Image 1: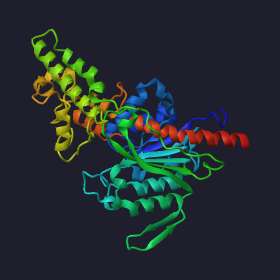
Image 2: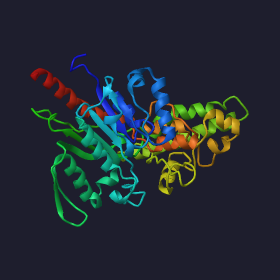
Image 3: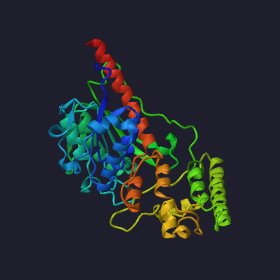
Image 4: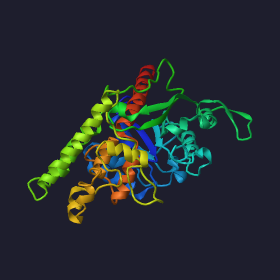
Length: 397
C-alpha cells in the first residue's frame, strides 16, 4: 500500500454509543481505538463493529479495551500495522469530552469540575502528536465566562497567552498546532431534525498546513431542516399499524392521525417563520436522578406541541404489547412517547444501529451522543486537509 493509499486513522476518547465514530467512519477515518467508560456504550460499540460488514477494518484492528481515559496510554497499548503506535503516526485524535462542566443546564464549573477532560485531551495531543485534533462540546464552552479557559486551551495547542488563576498573564509555546476554528454548528443544518448546537474545535498540526494547504469550516448540507413529522412518520405509523384490524383499530388510526396532524401543523406554522418543526435538544439524563425522559419542562412543552409526550420513553412495539403499556406508550392524552429507536432517528443515527442495555441505559446513550451527520461533516472537512497534505508530500518526496 502506497503512502497515498494508506488508511486515515483515528483514535476517539469519550466515544459513547458511537455517534461521532459513525460520522468519522463515513468521512473515511478508520478507528484504531475507541475509549469509553460506560459499560453499555462499550458493548454498543463492540456489537456494532462485529455486526457491520462495512466496519471490517475496525473488527480486525480497533482496540475497545480501554474504559478510563485518565489511564489511557496509547503509546503503550494501541497498535497500527502490528506495532505500537508512535508519535506522529496518527491522523486524527477526536473526542466529545464531557459537557456538564460547561452546560447551561448545570453549574458551569468549567475547569473546576472534576469531569473536565480538556487537560487529558491536551495530554494525549502532546503524546500522540496527531495530524489533526477535533474536540466536541456544548455551546456553553463558548460563553464569555470561559474565555480565559479557551485562551488556555488554544495557547497549549498553538502558542499564545492566557490568564492564570492568580490573574497573571502566562505565555505558552504550544504544541505546534493551529486552531483553525472553534465555533458552533447547528445539527439541523446537516439533516438532523433537532435543535442541537455543538461547539467544535478543529486544530491541525502546523507542518500539515504548509504550502497553501488550508482548512475550510463545514457548510450546511441541507437548505431546509428536516422536521419531526418527516423524520418520524414512518416509524410512528409502524407502531400504530400493529393495532390496525384489531380491537383497537379505530383508536390506533385516530391516535396516529392526531399525532400526524399536530406535528404537521407545528411544522407548517414554523416554516412560515423559517423554522421546520424540529425537536428540542435531546438530553441523556442523569444516572443519579431516576429514569429517562425528554428533558426539562420547556423541552416537554415543545414536544407536546409536536404531539409527543415527553414524560418518559416508550417501550418498543413487542415489549409494549407484552407489558400492556400501550396506554402510556401510544395512547396517552398528550400523544405517544418516543421509543429509543425514534430518539435515535432524532439524533441522526442509522436505523440499524444497535444499542446495548436496558431502555433507560439505551436512551442515555442516544441522548448524550454527537449527531453522526454533524461529525461526518466535520470529519470530511478535516479529511480534505489530510488528503491534500498527503498528496503534496507524495509529490515532494
